[in-house]
Amino acid sequence: MSTNYQARGQILTLIATGTVTAGTPVIYGGSFVIPITSAVSTGTFTAYRAGEFTLTKEAGTAVASGDVAYWDSTNEHVELADAVDNRKIGAFAAAALSSATSCSVALDAVSFGAGNDDIEAKVDIADLASTSNGKGASLSGIEDALGLFTGTTVEAALAEILISYVAKFERTEVTIASGASSGASAADSDWINANIMSCVPTTGASDAIVELVSVDGSGAVTVNCASNQTALVTYTVGGRLA
Image (cartoon, rainbow, N blue to C red):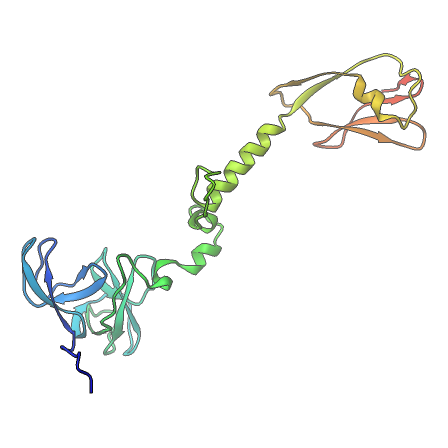
């Protein structure tokens, strides 16, 4: 026989952190409780953490006996929705019509921890998969022990990577030397590279990152625009064609 049993543990004696009203639900630390007595800040009060109680219900939603009950702290009512900030507190003890503004709830006598350990209530899985603004990657944090990123979410880190990448590849306006390519072979890309006179970063609409060099069967060497593959200039062994 157990020798360390003390009580059923359904009633707690607590110190109020603010005004507490008998019968009005309170989330105290990590527990959802129903105060038995009222108290002002720093005063002592007793509260139930288990049992069956009549609570305010979300209007417009019908519930069935046995449905999981969640507490919405913002609106101070019980509802069916497993929303991000809601806490699972128990089950509906009886059915209630959508028009009903109160219902019977059997409390679970569970603790949430300092925040809310109900993972399903903390995170809406559909939001994690969403591509909508403020959802998806913006809800997923990153572990960054090396301090490589300023942002703390996947979305913020990806944005930093993109900005860093683009900064390394500024669009450029290219000036190519005119004149004969005397002595160069059609397959010799070194001549084209040696005759690039300037690569000056600009902001004009016609700027292009240039990819050097393509060679066709006729012996022409073409310098192309990387953005749209349009030929900027073509050379042959005898000199510039276009």
